Image (cartoon, rainbow, N blue to C red; front, side):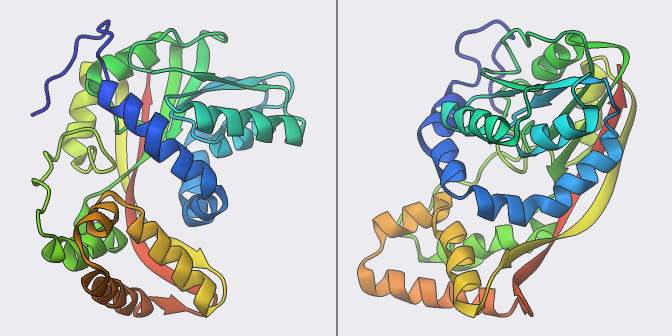
Amino acid sequence: MPTEATPSSPEANAGQRRYWSERAGPHWVERQNVFDTMLAPHGRALLDVLQPMRGERVLDVGCGFGTTALDVARSVGDEGGVHGVDLSSAMVERARERADAAGLGNATFQVGDAQVDPLAPHTPYDAATSRFGVMFFDNPVAAFTNVRAAVRPGGRLGFVCWQGAAANPFFTIGARVLLPALLEPPPSPDPSAPGPLAFADPERVRRVLAASGWSDIAVDGRKLPVRFVGDSDVAMATALDQLMSSDLGRIAARQLDSRRLAEVIEAACGELDQNRVDDGIQFDSAIWVVSATN
């Protein structure tokens, strides 16, 4: 189990701060359109459970480059507002640019850590939400306690997170194709460590939220597509780029000589090709749609 930093510790989420500031944040910004296309069905599922209403104020945790926040801003109207918080300055800068371009002055953003930082300026919020942004805390109980403190009594929480790797086949291509080829494979990750699959266990989600003081907790499964759209070459290049820019892909690029790396990429393309559809490449995915009340 990872050591959970105390809520006020300046070391809280230090690794994630570095990761999202130096690597993941810029990567997501560069591929904003790809991620938004991939995750569009998941964003719609989130809005279905959150049901933002006109005049409400909403907190977006791990807001990324602002896609969910901008959708919420349109729903709540000028009478309401949305405030996004993210560790990555690159993501927050892009979110602000998008809000300005869309004329959404009711969407504000800050670089910050929802586990330890004050969640100003619009407290108390009517609701808190997140599209795949709550799985990266050193101490998730502290984080959800901090979020709950910013939500009014009777306010609500709604977020989506990934189920396990076995239910998300795009996640397992790296393990099947890249991992066996590595000269020095990385250690197996702790399933509860901060990362995309940290909330794969629905019982852990319930325990964390209950320990954070949330009630009326519901964790519902949903199966949705992950799509890489475009003609044959474009979709393949996009999907392969996503695979090879993963942590395992970066390790493979460092460790393997050009011949072996080409063989691995060819094998990956073979797996991707098995998932072709008329307008690109598509994988099944499985998420938890989570809701709770303060």
